[in-house]
Amino acid sequence: MDKLMDSIKLKVKCFVGFIFVAIGLVFLPSISQAEAFNKGSTVATLGIGSGQLFRESYLIFGAGVGYYVADGLEVGLEVDYWSGGNPTVYELTPRLTYIYDNGAQIKPYLGVFINRTYIEDRPDSDAYGYRAGVLMKAGRSVYVGFGLVNTELQDCNDTPFFSCSETYTEASIIFSL
Image 1: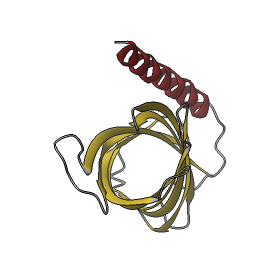
Image 2: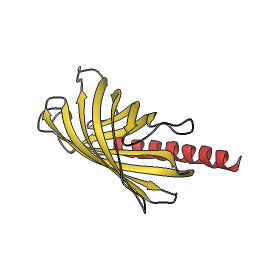
Image 3: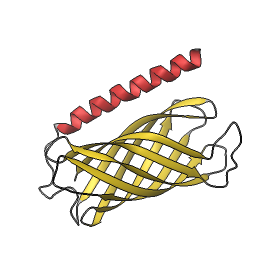
Image 4: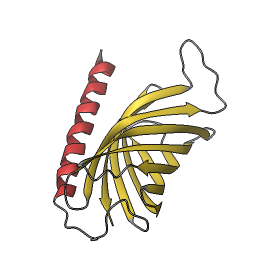
């Protein structure tokens, strides 16, 4: 029961933290007059979430940068740090994302990625996956995103107690540099 309460408290803290970061970024001044998703634009992302690994609960902090090689097509790199559990975990995720800039306030996106996870004192692991969701304009150069992600672990065997595939929600903040 204590583990369940700890997990709920961690998720509430993550949500509250994300809201404060989102509010702060909405009020950032515009750094660039270019459209956020046009060819040649650079964007940065911030994320916060929670996860579990080896029966430990973690608070996950993420940051990334992306470059638009064509209108709506971003090549990017994310780094995540898993805090609060043992062992220490870092993730490195190159990504390719297409954002359909339809001129509306809400913009759908689709993306694919590969992932390398570094776990202290354990073998590294690889995964690939895809994501889909929407971005909503929150300021001159700020967008808030919500979506679904599916990740497939490599070199993994499904068992009745462990799945090699995971689907989860994501929330992010994207701002134009």
